[in-house]
Image (cartoon, rainbow over all chains, first blue to last red; front, side):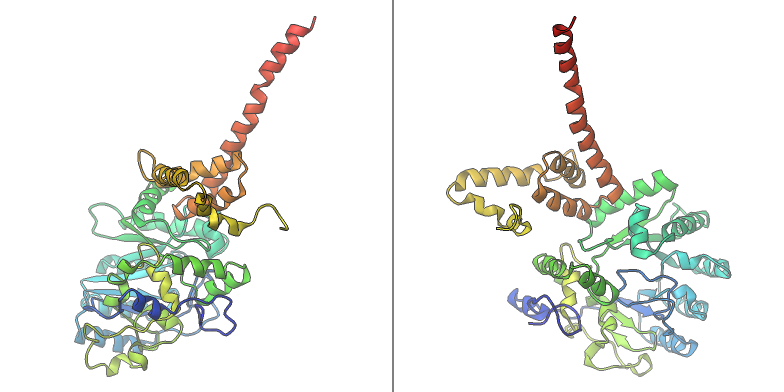
Length: 323
Length: 110
């Protein structure tokens, strides 16, 4: 039986995800699509150990202005209540302001993922001003309130920079009551273990961030690390792979399947092709089984359309799930 | 058997119910109830368990409650401080018996 991942020589045999669904009498199919995720590319100033896309400063795949225009036209042809811009580090993509300007009038909720450190530096003030002007929701990676653990995942000194940027965002009104500027945090576990429950983690992060650094935010989301890319390599190198995969499969929660994010989600790659989610993008498993460019899409997948799955999907169904 | 402690044995803990199932059931039911959120959160209870695991030097418990503490949202700084609390109590428990030693010595001494 295959293990989780795409490479040969898998050390851990697991039940295929599709078989686990079948055993529970379930199928993973689309509901109504509400969210368009736009991946602007794999260029990043960090090399996080949990990154399933293996983003880094050595990656040159970034979204061109031409592809952005195609994505904007796509979002204009179809209605997406939520558009979620991600990367790599979108801030490093030169034409990002063009993308934000184009998408903001089309989406009631426009989100921009940030690793925070990429928001610091020359020219970023104008990007922040653009986000404020369009009421862009900022979704910032902040894995742990313990700097040594956060830096172990993201790189030495990243937490210090992140805290400085969070303070600056608060000063700009982000995360502050009554401003309408939403600042959300995302915490991925800093190792081979499952995340804390979202509610409990949010309470604790809120107290810790306020007490230690006087920082405020709106919501915190916790997600399990997906054993793909650099995280998978780390699991294998450190001898954690088998136990992690076993834990994910043993934590399979059938009731999470119906609420999985991918059911309402479409992901566009940096070069403009459609995927069911960012993890299928990481393994180049396109939506519908073939690569379709946003310029060529005539209709969105209808409810009931099957979603491509892989064994890494266990990371989204573990515990309370990636919902 | 190469060592007395095998991490895989933790997964077979429930087999302790063989030959005494009613006692085991009572224990495991009680155990599960203890760790549910009450006046203390599940995270706080896991942290206490981690500290106690070090005080009683149980490798199974250290393994289980290191993972549980991380998964309940404690960070490594908090977990390290919890172990220091266990160490302080253990060390203090030794040291405070010095009071007895001194009392006895004083009684025996000129």
